[in-house]
Image (cartoon, rainbow over the protein chains, first blue to last red):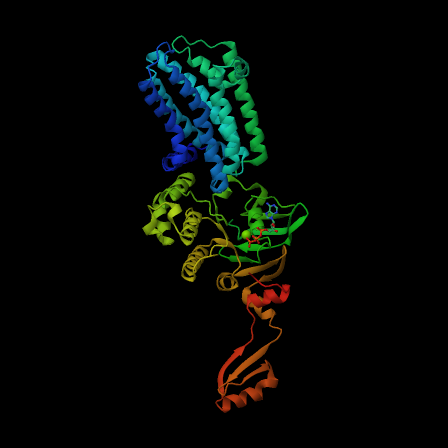
Length: 232
Length: 284
Ligand SMILES: Nc1ncnc2c1ncn2[C@@H]1O[C@H](COP(=O)(O)OP(=O)(O)OP(=O)(O)O)[C@@H](O)[C@H]1O
Ligand SMILES: [Mg+2]
């Protein structure tokens, strides 16, 4: 592993994303939406931070996942990733460079959610910790999709349904019990559950087990994708 | 000891499923040599470059690139190779400068090189322009700048001048010759016979995956000078074709004595006519 090369990729990604509106909007939309709705809607009897938790969950299911998949698949389609590999950049250096950037960008978004949700001190730390776990899992899913796909089109066709499941199921589960039984099995639901208990956070066996199992499946899928298509 | 042969292939063969794309390819490229792989579309030129750069694995035969087996080029090995692939692989949204800056960081070389190579390829005025705003020829030159930035020992250029105007193409020829002057071994593919004749120390004519002729371009042409004819155009407008030997001496002598000659040509074939002669095919 070369820190220098990872940093080079990281810097490239900062410059590139700033000029890439379709990706950038993914990272800005939900935090912005939360700021607006949270200040505009004050419904009696609604749980505190209802919208913050709802949108933060959607954010986790969407932004890191689509961002990672879009970046990797575009680089494959345009042959830039091949040029990087031929210039002596390792797959790990590339993935960590891009992944670290998206992770930090999403954590910035997470801080915005945290501020809007008015979390203080240890509550804020708990909130960011829970967010970081969700973001990391989504990142890995996005990496697996991007690696599997040969171009942006095929990445998008996988990203959209996958993203819908992870970001909308927790919301639908609030209204429908049988959906709730299924959504218990996905990490974004568990993250959503944890976020409802910020301040008095306790990790249950179910939380840890489901998230760990999701991660394990994703890593396995990534390895399969990598074996099938490679990065270049 | 420095090895003189930068690329050596030994009976390389390649096929995709049942489609045989390369057969029995033997070439040798030394430092400071420009080698041209010529052939019509679909002949297998890009495939050979991909094999030599480790992007594809041949089905049989071996190749040495910088003394390494092509199937296991090391990280250090790749740092000594520069290439311009048929699809340029530039970052569209980044500027010329940012595109090159990425690679100075990857290679761990000074940022000063960016200015040097941008000047060299004539893109000094486009430094801050995004790649998607560049013309095709400018992109090609930027890709070339990237390929030579780290002073590689081998340059692979897949159709470096295709689709460019003659002035830009000639500019790129100058750059290629400059790299050759530094001892870089250059492997280029082209459809352009004139370009090959002008630049290359050796060419291989590839047809349907086989090398049908290999050597110094002028020697190849001379070898195919079957017809060996001399063409005379006289001042009175008549044209005569004579055999190029002593039997024509008297006749030609007389034309000259009478001051009747407008022009005289020997019928040496060029690479293009040679290729057509060998294959019965026309170049596109
Ligand atoms: N990945 C692949 N899978 C299957 N067939 C392939 C693949 N790559 C190339 N081919 C086939 O190999 C043959 C040679 O292709 P190649 O790209 O090497 O030709 P080329 O000489 O570079 O042509 P051009 O001048 O048009 O670039 C073609 O018939 C092509 O269809
Ligand atoms: Mg080609």
